[in-house]
Length: 135
Image 1 (cartoon, rainbow, N blue to C red):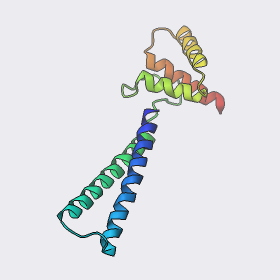
Image 2: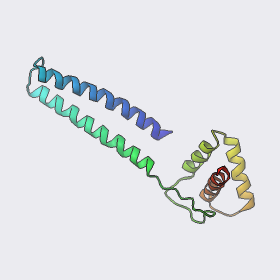
Image 3: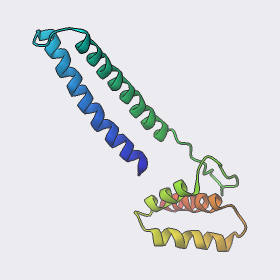
Image 4: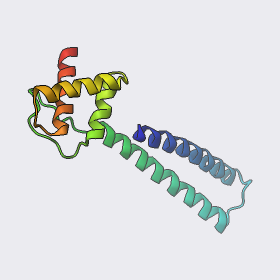
């Protein structure tokens, strides 16, 4: 959810900056805006802001799309330290269409059938079982 907010806000600011940059450049080209040091630095700063936002926004999108899946074909046996419990919990709740009670029940059942495992292991196992059952 947090990444979606960053992407939405970044896209909005990128759109506004692009519109403003386009307007300033068109006014410079048409001759309605005098070219001086102020307009030069203003245009340069708009270009830098636009380029930075563009890079950061698409870097964030690429990072989100290339997030590795740690669930193997069998029952997960290794815990990936890069994925936190909260991320896996959000992913599980998302798979269950927002049903947090069902997610907690599935985790509880997994803990009862396989006690003594790491917290991430249970989330990975339940996610893998859900994917298997839906296929």
